[in-house]
Image 1 (spheres, rainbow, N blue to C red):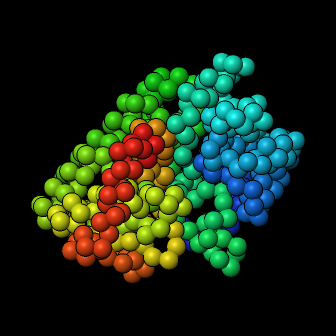
Image 2 (tube, one colour):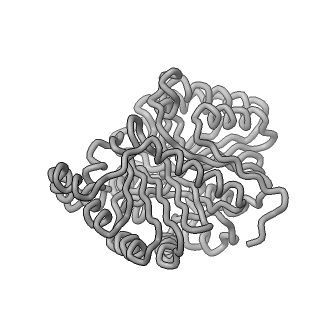
Length: 376
C-alpha cells in the first residue's frame, strides 16, 4: 500500500507527553471525537480527560466514549453521569453482570433476564483496544489506558512503560468503520467484508483473528535478520512458540523483552513456563526492571507494529485489539532505538542460572497455563 506524502507518525513512550498531546488534540477538535479505551480509572488524570471531553461536547462537537466493563472503575457511573449531562455519549462494552448500575450504558439492546444472560455469556470477551479518532483525520492508538498508573512517580503514578502512536495524513476509514461497528453492534462479518485495505490490524471476527495470526507467523517464519518483541503478557500458543524457536535455529536474532513484575502478579510465572525452551534454542530473554512494562511492539526485519495486542490467548481468541503497521522508515528506526534503550533498563536471563534458581516459577507457571488457558 502506497503511503501518502503527508503521512506523519509520532511515537510516544513518555506518558506526560502522550496525555498532554491527547488532551490538546481533544481541545482542538472541530467536529467529532471517538474515544475507545479498555481501562478508565477515577483519578486526577481521568478528571483532566473528562473535563476536556465535556468542554468539547459543550462546543457542539460530537463526542462518543466507549470503555470496557472490566476496565471501567467501580465509580465509573459517576464519570458517565457527568459526561452524559454535558452531551457526551457514553457506552460500556459488556458490563459485568453484577454492576447493574452500568446496564443502561451497555451496547446490547437486550433487557431484563435476557440481558443478564447475555452479559454472563460474554464475560470473557473484552474490548482491549485503545483508540481515539479526532475529526476523522487524526488517530491515537497504542497501550496507554486512561489511568494515572502510566504517569511518573512525581505525578502520583506508577511509571508504567508504554508505547503509543499518533497518526496524521492517512485515510482513517477502516478505523472509523471498526469503531462504528462496535458502537452500533453492527453485524461483524458484514462489516469485516467492507473494511478497506489499510495498515490497521483488527480482530473483531474469527476470520480476522485467524488471518492476523497467520500473517504474524508467516512474518516470523520468513524473518532473515531480527525478531524483537516487547510484550506485557507473554503466554504464547504452540504455533508461536515453535515459530520463534525455529527462527532462532535459523540464525535470526530473536530477543523478547518482558516485565520482571506485573500488575497481574502471576503472569511472569506463566511466561516463565516457556523460558527454558526459548533460552535453550538461543533466544535472548530480557526482564524489564524496576517498573511495569506494558508496551506491545513488534519489530521483524524492516516491518514493525505498535498496538494493544498481547502475545497470549486472550488477545488471540477473546479480546478486541487494534494494532498498526508502521509505514515510515524513520518511525521504524525510532522504535528500534527505543527497544535497545529498554534493554539497558533490563536484565538478560541466563539459561543455566534460570534452570537452577527459578524452577518453582516454571512449575507454578505450567499449572497456571493449564488451569487458566481460557483466561490468559
